[in-house]
Image (cartoon, rainbow, N blue to C red; front, side, top):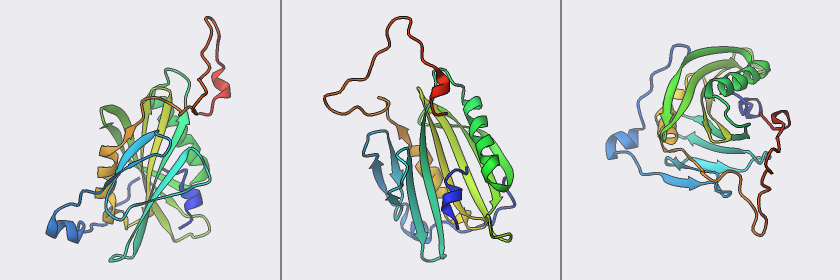
Length: 209
């Protein structure tokens, strides 16, 4: 699977049913580990065998897992964006979906609705899309979009279509544990954030959105 395309993706075709994690069914769910972003921007609980990976983008964090028993892999990405003040969740979700439509081949949208993530309103949507260069290969994505202050978050689960049932329960646990930082972008020691003077305006067009 070409994850370079998938990173920006967040339909639901009939879902293939899989049994849950056999080890967890026998022994109970593992505790996993709380992973904290090195820059203090968020924390998330990683179920067993999910690993953090470096990416070339500063505002994108990637986690992955390979299930040896099933021979399937999955990726979860957390993307951060700086937003103008008072952006509505519905507006932000629509914006990122428009981006998605431009880049995903034969995108199909499935179930979509509001959820709560650590007390914050969020939008969750399922998609399927065709992998570029592989007409017979279809991928599955589940995307959660939320806003915390002036920062937008895009959390995306990705797998081959039909394999999502192996990982979705763990993805739900990751989402329920996701906790964005409260202090905004980190500031280096010895430097202070520039404060706006009275009457000073900021052009939202200059901000990444």
